[in-house]
Length: 585
Image (cartoon, rainbow, N blue to C red):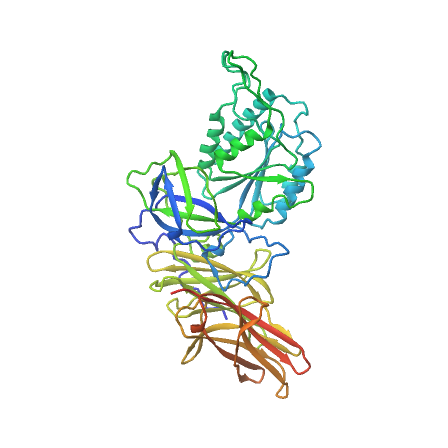
């Protein structure tokens, strides 16, 4: 049943303390494995950040999820996350699809369209993209979540290149493109979140004077400074660049050097040299653009699905509004770091008012509000009237946090809120809620405010439904701790000697014969590493509770699959599972 909604009108401004900690500058970076999969959990002690060559102190480190990670069909099954956190909120990505129109000859545009189709297939409703054609056409479509508009914009892209291009021609068009790219990135300066830039080009020239040393600079002079400008504006825009080139683009032409007499200089017409300069200037990732299908940008989808934000301790002489060199290192083997070579810190505008947000406003937002770290989860039970109820469990990382307002919403796939819950007593431990909802898959969002004004918002994907096994139905498997009044649900375990696993069995009669088992395994379908005795207790005529104890002391820290298995006399079987996480103490 839905509880009353205390504190709905309490504003975020009113609940904040009168004195607040001075925020430190933020550095964002991407940490991935060799296949582009984001690293799940980095510790602050594993990260070293240098600004202008000086190591800075990390105040905090958090992982920001922008989209569900694309999973390749051949990937082995993974354990589902045991709960949702502030980091599980898919905040969405902003992707700028930039086409170097003068580098592509007419007829090759379909390669770009196929690649973008593949990227859009991995988009979520929170993602948005823009199509920009440089240097002349400009913005085809501004940032939008409408995939059809993005595809139409890509369909209208036409190559303006020529098949007979000299080195001087390439230098001229490269300069035009870099100047236009610099302008676009400058327009994105001061963003509150990173920008993913997918840059399609069929070749760029390297820096050149386009004339002999005895003469003045040529008409198509291309300076190193043109590339260095992109270093600065990419840092200001928090832009992560991917340079996508045709996979048949190879080294062509030669670089001729002038003689001692200052004659014979023609420069270079190698289309890869300028791409290499841009990569070095921005730490861009180069990807091949092939004609085999729509998966050319899978790497972009993977690497952009999460990033890390590191808050640095404020420096008394912090230089705001000025670009400085950035170096991010992760002190763990097998981790690839993607970080821009320069960063520009923006000073918060003076007098900026904190927006007044009620608990209801925070629930309808998509922001993560990481100051108050939360764990949230849900489980399905059947009520006596046979409606389904989602039980909600809320935990904080900070055991000393005093919660003053807590609420939750269930959101369906169309973005509609189907149920709400507000805690009548936020001080209860464990903090449990309940919402009635029809069967389906939902986004569970929980928001909490504590006594010192910190906000926390966490999300989890939950299933409301029962598992059918012949005439029987199984409720969700729940993990918790034994207490005098029953089992207290728990989302994460540590030094406790045992955890209690339980689930409800509905239906059947007194003569229904079943075999019930509990197992612990390292993955959803792997062999059991422990088989546990089960106790069956009849709670009502239509409900039996299956319970077993999981010995935590014998398990190393990590995630495990706990499986509740029900097998009928005729061989029909079904199971319910939940991931158990034992954290290192």
